Length: 445
Image (cartoon, rainbow, N blue to C red):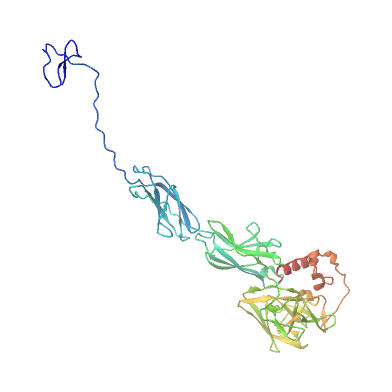
């Protein structure tokens, strides 16, 4: 302590060591400004793990969910470096760790299974408390569908049009609407904006059948159909099928060639010369193919048997020559009863002794020959309606006077079909023939 002189406060009378420096007669205390007290500094708190993220949500996708959240209210005193997303039940790539973002994707999930998700934040201390679970989220995609068959069992009869579709699965979300959509040529990919045939009740998997299109008007062979199905994700379409009224022959059917050999129909080429019947002359002749059909598959065929031991597999209503009717007729109709007489490649009349439908998958083809239109399949004379140009008696056309249809009435794309199908002499309308030829072209090898 230092003591100063009463008259001169700057004069020291007692040194720091307490040794007297004079006589002390009066002492005054120095009055200066007050000095506030100094607090002792508090040591900083140690950081902790972050608090839990909030508002965890999920958006479903195809076998995945996108999870989002809000940042924790506290980072625990240390910057958040990562977030860990965990699914319940555990699946796919869960848990997922992300950095610098507040969203992440959990993949490898099962469509149709409900999941909840929690998120935890991570800093230098460690992993914080997990969030409250999100609401349940179910990943899904559009259904898996396909179109199986689109055929007509009786030509020209709308009620005989049959469409078969297949629902592979519902994509993990309940199918709410399903059926078939139909359109006219040239629109070969119908949608819900076109004609719709709804199948009820909905099924989540398996095949379904629709008989006769809506309105009963689509049966001319120039229409397309495909399966559709709708769930919460959206609408999906199957493969498109053209209405199958093509008259065809099963794979393995033997076609009689001009060289005396037989050749399987699936191997016929445009260079082959085929035995035909010339109804102008009433004699055997030969011709090359005008049109060869590409392969398709059906789920059934007609088995025709004849009294010479011959059998023939036809698809839909492939016509055979019918002596009693004097024309080519559909074998599976009353126009061709058992007992009908036809003609074979040996020039002999044979009799149809049985006919039946066999439900079995079969690959099928067809061939139309130039000008004569017909051929011998497994020895039996077969053709299509364009061979019914005139009535037939004693294996010859009974011709009549009729107007000739000029080639100018057809568009240029008809080309060789004008001569090949003898369109100048046909009574089938130009409009119907144009549709028919366009269909032939769409199926041509």
